[in-house]
Structure formats: C-alpha cells, structure tokens
Length: 190
Image (tube, rainbow, N blue to C red; front, side, top):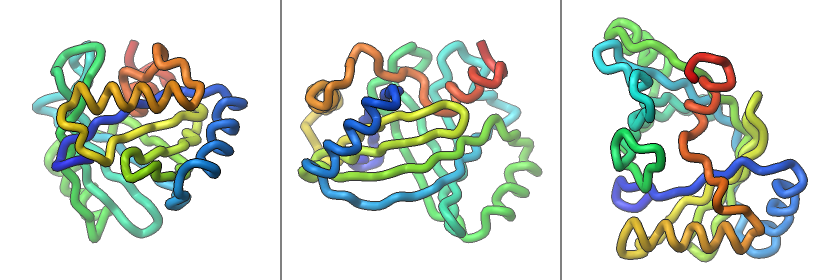
C-alpha cells in the first residue's frame, strides 16, 4: 500500500505451481513472516455491500493472535467487474470483542469468515508477495506494490510482468477477492 492506495493482483494457484513459486520466493525474495489470520467481513444494513452485482466495498476485522485490525477498502472503478486499485484504511483494535459488539448494535452483520495461513516475502522493496492457503478455497498468491510506480496503470503493468515471470497465467487473475469467493463457495451469492 502506498499512501492509502493499494494496488495488487491475486491469483488462484494449482497446488504444484503454489509450491514451485514458494521455492522460487526462497531464492529471489526476502522472507518476512508466516501468520495465521482470521478475517471477518461485515456489511452495514443501511448500505449492503453485496447488493451490487460487483461489490466494491469491504469492512473487515482481521485477527492475528491477540491483535485486531479494522480495515475498510473501497475499490475503483465502482460497480466494475475488474477493479484497478482501492483506497484502504486500517487501524489497530485493542478489544476486538467490544468492536464486534459495537458493530452489532449499529446493525452491521457478518457476511463471511476467511481463515488464512499466509507466508509473506518481499521482492526488491517493490512487491510484497503473500502465499495464502485459504480454508475451503485453496492456494493463492497476492502480489502488492510497495513502491510508487508513478500511476495505478504503471503499477498494474509491473504487477502483471512480475506475475508472468513466476509462470502464472496472468489472464486468470482473481477479480473479486476472498470474501466474494467464499460467499460464492457457500452459495450466499451467485
């Protein structure tokens, strides 16, 4: 994320490619950490995020151990099948249980929970690479820009080039994100 703007690409990977890329990351990138995180996604009653054909907003509480992070993302362009970037705002939360009670009182409802085991690498201070194993969804790679490439279009171009260099079929990037995929997987949206 550069200045509250996130530009990233996500790809679902077959198991053999996932492990091949994992080995490649060990050779070309700096290992950062492994984490297990649980993400709960919420929507307000007054503006249901998933009422649209192409949702462009998400509100998430991420739990990593005892730490909580409240996160809001707004994707652009709105109501489009393919998003190019998003505004992302987040803050640490001292008491996740109390925050969940506040959201409930304010009539927010939980949409879905994502359980993720994530392995993070940094490549040349340009890209953060997350190798994700998502319960009930499979293996994914997220590649996010950490360098300002001058424009969203240039950043996306660099992301696609890097993904292609890893042997990824870049035409198969994920357009919707984990919460949408999980809701689709559970039959909550079509």
